[in-house]
Length: 503
Ligand code: TRP
Ligand code: ZN
Image (cartoon, rainbow, N blue to C red):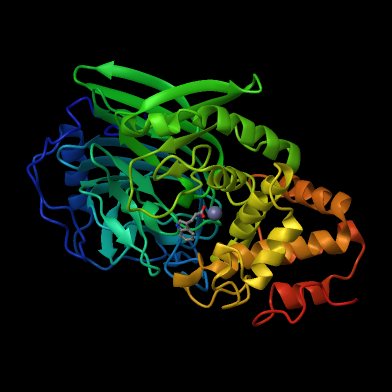
């Protein structure tokens, strides 16, 4: 804990009177009863953020404000330009009764060019103050952009720490496709879900999948609650009527895969094949229906490791929350979140994402089929390997339209979702899986599984795109697969024939 206010010993919960929602645009924190350290910080911020024109260059040649987005075609506002985060230290306090979150986000980042100011993504909440390298920084908000202006500009290549103190009742975000993400309150607790934009509802950050980072997430909750997050539990401490959980994610994580889940969970810990720590948290009301889940996670991880290559993270597990209306599960890193006890296929799907999506992450959202097509094909492979239909039979059922999940799969080519609201539509899932089956048919099983393992190995913990996948397929097979991808991945409408065209 470096910043003086990073872990306050004063009660984290409900020390402030209720505050109204923040206005859309704010340039300065308003006075409130605050902890001594924070009050000092704000006083200093007020002293330096006064009038006068701010010289953008500040003696640093070429220093300019960082961009408000990274240029994602589907999500132009996501992420921010000019820096790269290497670590997030989130120190959170949450009270399920008051629904209030108190947070300190400390980002360690490196500038990719000289910056006079930088942006973060944050939706809702109230910013109490910020520092850059320990010096007060000016804050301004427009929509979901939080701008920090440090006292002095940052030169290119500088490693810096930005610390933001914030609080409020985090919001639930409605996606363009109608689903809900961000902060979701449950009967007794809450869950943070971030795909594709929801993480900005509970911490400020560079919320684009191209900027992966390590995470330390420390959450203090009332005694009796368990706070679960990604990675491994580094520490757990009881103090008075509260408990603090410190979770650590050493391997790079895209922010949409970060989660916290707070509830009176039943916890099942074991080790998968004797070495990999496994942590399964289940809402106690769902315990009966999830009795087999710990064993199932172990079995699926073993099978997927054999099929896709080495498991990419230091631990595994699952979180089963009671969210009957959520309508989806999410592959949050190391511990996917399920809205109810998952069936076998869904478990296979979310755990397959640990390789495809979590470890190998698309560089841009249009390449979502690299997540969903692969996780869906994992379901087909599992069924084929467990006395169900063969992948070919499932492919045929999708082509004929007899599989329940085949509806709508021809609406657009899997690698070109037409808008942000459609990145989770059926073409990305079902037709994405069909692309992989076509590749398998063209190159044969031996080469196909070698391609899958090379993909997870070559891009482990990184970002990748469709062009790289096509190049890998062609390299491993020695074949020109352009026609196959043109028809199945990029072609409009249903291909005239279920087999790939002759080459
Ligand atoms: N990725 C989730 C899955 O495993 C589904 C999902 C949830 C999703 N929210 C999303 C997909 C937002 C795209 C966008 O299938
Ligand atoms: Zn998925």
